[in-house]
Length: 202
Image 1 (cartoon, rainbow, N blue to C red):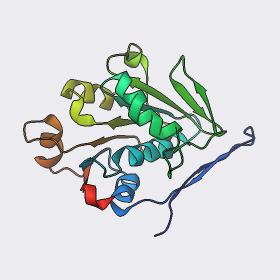
Image 2 (spheres, helix red, strand yellow):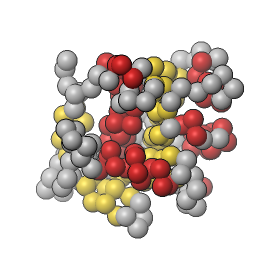
Image 3 (cartoon, rainbow, N blue to C red):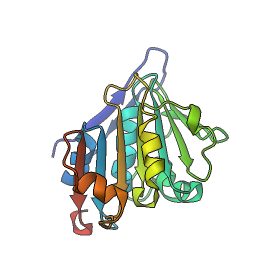
């Protein structure tokens, strides 16, 4: 399969970002979607978090962009999502190659060389969100969020540096009473897309 790539370069950057990735078909469908709202629904082991991190990178390479990466709790974000983004998981390399970014842990911000920045947070530690504008937002385990939290993030998509402003969510399947199920499976709209995968697909 052709390997899609995320690339960004700048005359001011000594180490431009060039990442070449191999994606499974369901991961690639999620990565390639340009719908304003994208849901990746899959069972454990379907490669959802890794695909989510690559999609965050896809947006963050644009200079001037500001991309949100979140989960319900900050502790779970650090233990899972952020680890996939920044740490190796043999035989897999980290999504962000070492030397291509500056990590300001105190500010929870990752600035990409020649690109934009990623701001990561949990909804138990999100004091600054009301004043932030994002070009895109990635949500891990969206089933954990409340509907008002999701809608609030959707309303923060205001940064024009992003050519495809999106909110995208990776999660285990939601039941019919969950707002994500109602939003994506009961209402067919052209600005929303769903990708589904089983554990066997990875």
